[in-house]
Length: 98
Image 1 (cartoon, rainbow, N blue to C red):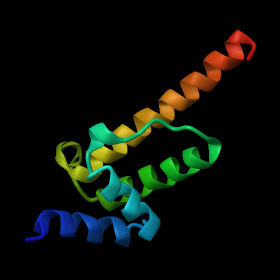
Image 2 (image 1 turned 60 degrees about the vertical axis):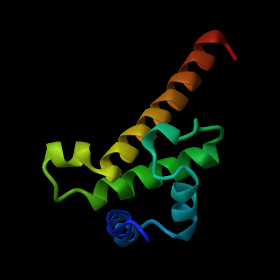
Image 3 (image 1 turned 30 degrees about the horizontal axis):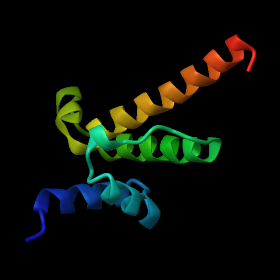
Image 4 (image 1 turned 180 degrees about the vertical axis):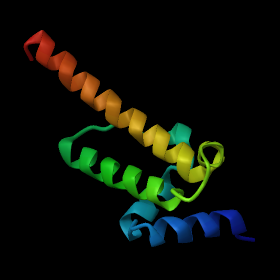
């Protein structure tokens, strides 16, 4: 039996602008914030930024505490952390002269 909570979450993120490819990506990581992979390219970085923005938009109406407890909020935070990791790596490469 499908999870009604996941169905509601999917509906919210689609309404916020995520498309079929994004849902496939989210399904592949099982909607698990701990499973968000590292950013490996500039193109992937753009996908991550778009996903983070849409996930945030999907829960904009919630309180801060509710956002942190939501699937969308946890995923947005994890994606944001991966974006920061990518930026930190780019800065470290620049500092090293690479």
